[in-house]
Image (cartoon, rainbow, N blue to C red):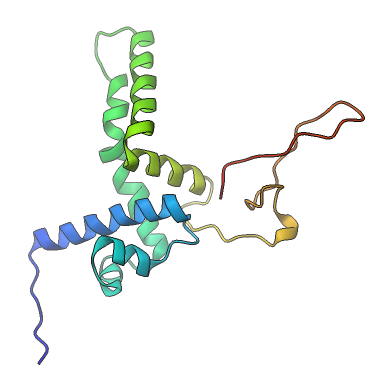
Length: 163
């Protein structure tokens, strides 16, 4: 006998929040392309069906991660810039300190920065890896400009953000 379980609005909101938080950490750790909805559901402690109840697909979940976590996770850091009557140099110093402290000590902030950097320029869509022949030296999928070197010397290795 199947019995439908009624959820309260609070339960529904908590499930959605758990999915967004689990996705944030999974996208940062595994990358958007490699993170799976099943893995995200497991990390959130829900079924994969719950993911599809709240989000149409991984791109919709990514949109929620980027759209809903910035104010909550990064808001306190940005608040350092909004102190009325404080000189700009002091506010910028406070912001830089808050940013670096959060990056070092707040795993959600660090994850949000990683996901934001990895998805920059993708218009909210998951990146698909390009064939190996078009990848940069690090295999990240981008063509990275190599630094110039003096004649007769090999250029230093190219690096870029891991993708």
